[in-house]
Amino acid sequence: MASNKSWSFVAVASSAILMTMLAVTARADGALQYDFYNATCPGVEDLVRAELKAKFAADVTLPAALLRLHFHDCFVRGCDASIMLKSHNGTSEQDADPNSTVRGYEAIEDIKAKIEATCPLIVSCADIMAMAARDAVYFSEGPDYQVETGRRDGNVSILEEALQFLPPSDGNVTVLTQFFAVQNLTMKDMVVLSGAHTLGIAHCPSFSKRLYNFTGAGDVDPTMDPAYAKNLATVCSTPADNVASVQPLDPVSPAKFDTGYYQSIYAHQALLQSDAALLEDSLTGAYVQLMNNATYLDTFFADFAVAMINMGRAGVRTGVDGEIRDTCGVYID
Ligand code: HEM
Ligand SMILES: *[C@@H]1O[C@H](CO)[C@@H](O)[C@H](O)[C@H]1NC(C)=O
Ligand SMILES: *[C@@H]1O[C@H](CO)[C@@H](O)[C@H](O)[C@H]1NC(C)=O
Ligand SMILES: *[C@@H]1O[C@H](CO)[C@@H](O)[C@H](O)[C@H]1NC(C)=O
Ligand SMILES: *[C@@H]1O[C@H](CO)[C@@H](O)[C@H](O)[C@H]1NC(C)=O
Ligand SMILES: *[C@@H]1O[C@H](CO)[C@@H](O)[C@H](O)[C@H]1NC(C)=O
Ligand SMILES: *[C@@H]1O[C@H](CO)[C@@H](O)[C@H](O)[C@H]1NC(C)=O
Ligand SMILES: *[C@@H]1O[C@H](CO)[C@@H](O)[C@H](O)[C@H]1NC(C)=O
Ligand SMILES: CC(=O)N[C@H]1CO[C@H](CO)[C@@H](O)[C@@H]1O
Image 1: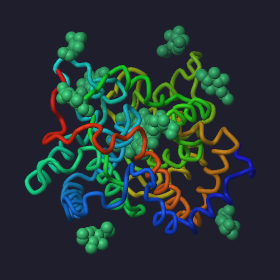
Image 2: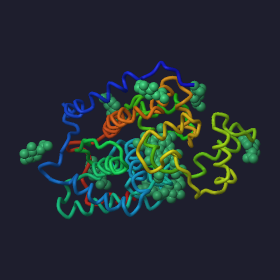
Image 3: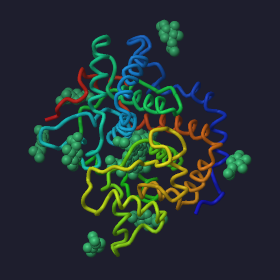
Image 4: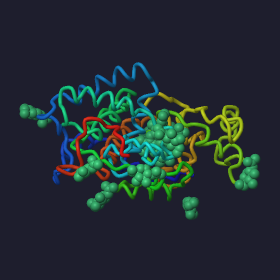
């Protein structure tokens, strides 16, 4: 259970100093910076936002897809758009099982084409994906934060690396923290970024084990609210079928970026095992408990902005490293 030995003070402080932090964190090492395209492609962030506004109006499920796309890109070979690369023989990141439900590739490609028309070979696909994740949060009533830009794209994409670096949905806090540490992200970044699950859905195979055969004894995950489990079981009627059926990751408010995700976890109504696990550890549990209190919405917003900027720095290529292509989803073989 969640203890009070918590990050509450850290969290509250971070809210107050967010604006200051955003103002002073331009990288001294010249890696990434705010407004990288200011001179070379002025207005590019406005263009991305305008394109996405229209796309999100046409498809309310797209914000969640684009937020997840940036995460799956960053955790494998860094935020270098390697997840966009395609393979004829089924060996790129896209072909890995955890990516089977990743969506939004076409939206990124459409926006890239629009940008190429005015700023050819200037703006990386990886930066467009970072902007799109930010705009996904913004248009879902979440925080608006400034993204760092200046990433360049990779041209290597390897299926096995997606399996190696994407965190497992049945991982406990120790395991999840290790996957984030590989990306230079902290345990706090982990519990905060998991809050992205305030948007979007999961397919039955991502959680049905919890409903039917949790320990192999035909049991239900004992940490799950029995009524919620029973309800889910009506949608995912057997462990094996209903592959296409989906459930909201945040049943409290599925399309709104808020702390409903943490409230769901606190009520033992987390959909994924990795979400439920956050309540079992004293530190992450304390954060869940804090965010169960609606008073801390602004604190979550501030924490999320900081954590997204941290994630957006993972393994980036800058300067003359990497490339700027005219198309994001080229074939690597
Ligand atoms: C902590 C480790 C994480 C695990 C184990 C995890 C796992 C998953 C799984 C299993 C799904 C459902 C896939 C499906 O069944 O279709 C999902 C969906 C999603 N994830 Fe995560 N995730 C993690 C962290 C993150 C992070 C850091 C972000 C973004 C910052 C993120 C954003 C999303 C979003 C937005 C969706 C919904 C996608 C949609 O509606 O299409 N996740 N995640
Ligand atoms: C963008 O560039 C213009 C002219 O080069 C400059 O006046 C402006 O301050 C720059 N803005 C930022 C945010 O760097
Ligand atoms: C977390 O999971 C790992 C791998 O399954 C296991 O070795 C470890 O004991 C677990 N830790 C806790 C605290 O449950
Ligand atoms: C439950 O899991 C056990 C152990 O993995 C397996 O032997 C059994 O067949 C499973 N039962 C069902 C109904 O899938
Ligand atoms: C929520 O947090 C505020 C500020 O710390 C506190 O005054 C209030 O009692 C908390 N509410 C609940 C339900 O815990
Ligand atoms: C993590 O930080 C180290 C030291 O600064 C750096 O060498 C490494 O590339 C970073 N890893 C990622 C994935 O960003
Ligand atoms: C991949 O990018 C590197 C630079 O990062 C470049 O040297 C190499 O020629 C590129 N390979 C292909 C196949 O485009
Ligand atoms: C797929 O194509 C790549 C590049 O041409 C090659 O290295 C790899 O062996 C191929 N894999 C399979 C399974 O055909
Ligand atoms: C978009 C895409 O290529 N998805 C693939 C993800 O991986 C699964 C299985 O590993 C494939 O069946 C999907 O086609």
